[in-house]
Length: 496
Image 1 (cartoon, helix red, strand yellow):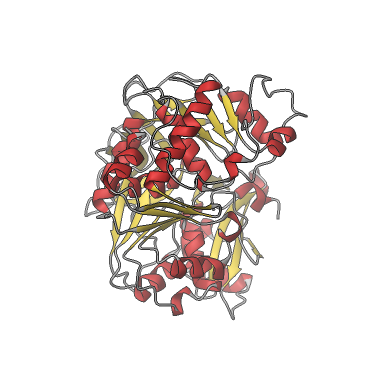
Image 2 (cartoon, rainbow, N blue to C red):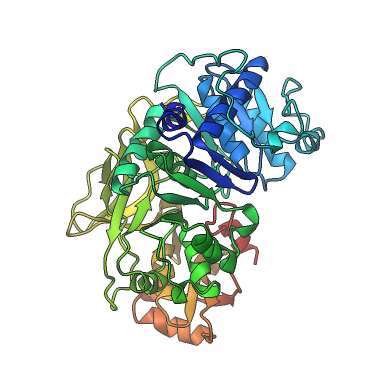
């Protein structure tokens, strides 16, 4: 299924631009031909149905061509973080046991010190050719690309979790589970051939599934944000303008960076017609500002762990000035059923909280190397509140609900209140120590021109939170530490 999208678009509009990246750009005809060439080379390395191909490349047209080539052989690709250290990559390669590792020779050599890497792995066979786009499509290769066998329930890709807590796990998605999201997203976003999609997320992050495959379904183009630009405030705003992006999708952190330091709130973006965000909570203050700056553009807040790609969504309308809590995560989308389960195992009613449980077509096959999921049901570990109108309000992670001096504390609620203070641009909260010494620590990024004191923030919290949820100490930071996916890295935060 996914392997057919580029080929179908190449037949319809061969000269339309498919991908623009740091290494050049390719039409659909070129991308189709290049994927065939790479597929033949991978087949020579023994790649076939059921194999895995690890891809340790910078974000590029080449990387997307390798993805397509892998799928054409009935194999699954495993995108690896180009910024990750060799020790971690070696661990993931050992876990996924790929038939081939596509990477520059120097990266392959960096893995030599880690004995976990199987000797049968091969770097890209020609150390120079993978860097170059074909000048013109090759309509008649010397030998045909092997036709994939199998079904759309076969494994298509493995996305390893960021590993910000515990051991990384390989999230396995089939063609069908990915398509459940992609087909819905293309319709919801009203995607068309004239669209120019941005790709901010790295390929190992599930947000990229939208960026790559939704445009491919309609013959639109995807424009890859270079790694060095990913968190350059002015660079991102300039990218948005220069590439005439029509659909933008990223974590809120990228948008807030563009607003705070890139001049986005003072910039007209005439080409933009749709804006989506996911991955973490968008603080209500900055979101209200962006909504007011772009009043005629649809905003969507999407929710879903990598295990489901996307589970729910909410269309963001005007945000009342008195709103303090983040916007809801909405209702079930992509054909899924989302149930909020109370601690007693019963479905939550209006006004009640519980764990979000997702059942449906976008749920993963399972974790690599572990028993498969047979009932297409995934308990997310996230807690939500059922609102009066049927929408769901994200409360926080189940494991982020802690107790301080015997009282249950919801850190996400504290963070929402802190972020409603006019002097706070971003905030995170943690509990330090344990037992009688446990206390709540706030980490805040002051808004421009502000320097809120601990007393100011304690008073602000006291007006909206119970006494046991009032912060005890505060640390002011220039920015919150984030992992490669743009989410707040709480382990690094605790080390501040």
